Image (cartoon, rainbow, N blue to C red; front, side, top):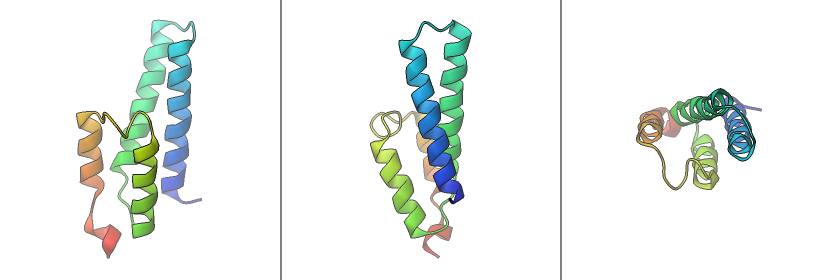
Length: 91
């Protein structure tokens, strides 16, 4: 498993936990922690520079399908994603 796949899996797990926090009777601190964990996982994924066109495709496919990323991307998520698009991916 490459590093991008690990980041995708971490984001998926953090998002599931965040959704669970919304639906559960968690304290405000627990909810905030789940939200921050999802945010950190999203930024790590979006900022990861792809090293091949296959990684670009995998990353774009996941982002397009992820509820918290694909439709209404937060400005700081978009900035991290744009900064990850480097020439290394097409070299």
